[in-house]
Length: 291
Ligand SMILES: [Zn+2]
View 1 (cartoon, helix red, strand yellow):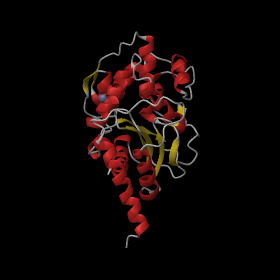
View 2 (tube, helix red, strand yellow):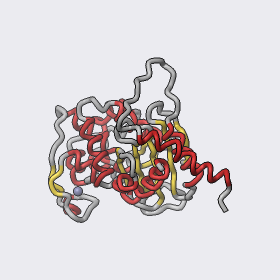
View 3 (cartoon, protein in one colour):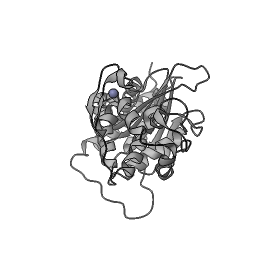
C-alpha cells in the first residue's frame, strides 16, 4: 500500500515541474540584478526528492548540483572528493587543451574501429570533434592525445579546477584510458559547470554541441531517449572500478539539463557497466524528475 506521504512526494514534483517545462518555449528568464543567489529551481527541487526517495540501488552513486549556483543539492557517493579514474569524462578538457595549442582548429580523423584502437569493434568512420565527443571515439582521441603531454594540459586543468595529470604523462592516459590520471568526482562536476559557463569562448561551442549530440544519438542516448519534455548535454565515461568488491569497470555519466540554460547537473556512477549503459540509469532518474 502506498502511504499518503509517499504519494504526495510523487505527485508534488510533477505538479510543480510541469508548468516550468511547458513555459520554457515562450518565457525567457529575466536576468537577476542583485547579488543574492537565485532560489532553487522547481526542477532542482523535484530532482532532489526523486533521487532521495526512489533511487537507492547500492551500485549507483550520484551527485546532484544546482547548475546556476553550483550548490550540491543531493548526493550519495562515498568519498566524492577522493580522486579516482573517470575514463572519458576527461575528453572535453583534453580536447580543449589541444584546441588552445592549435589555433582552435580541431582535427578530423578516420576511426577504423578496434583496428585503430577504438572501444567499438566497428569503425566510426570519419569524425569531426562534435561526433568524436558524441560517440566518445577512442581512435579520434588517441590521435589527439599523441600531440599532447601532461604538462601541456596543466593550464586547462588549472582553469577548470581538475587534478592535473603527471607532467610527463603521454599517450592514451591523457584521454582517460586506464587508472593513471585520477580526478575527484566533485571537481569533475564543477569542471563541466565551468565548461558550460565558458560556452561563448573559442573551442567550447563544439564540445557542448558534441554533448548535445551524445544525448541524441551517441553514448548518452539513454538520457536523450528517456527525456520527453526537455533535452540534455551528456558525456559518458568508462573506467576501472574502484569499489571494494571490484567489477571489470564502472560507468559514469555527466548530464546537464535542460541543454539550453541548464538547471541541474547530475553526475552518476554505475557499478559494473560501461558508460553508455550507465546513461540508461541516468535517463531513468532524469525522466522521473521531469514527470
Ligand atoms: Zn571510433
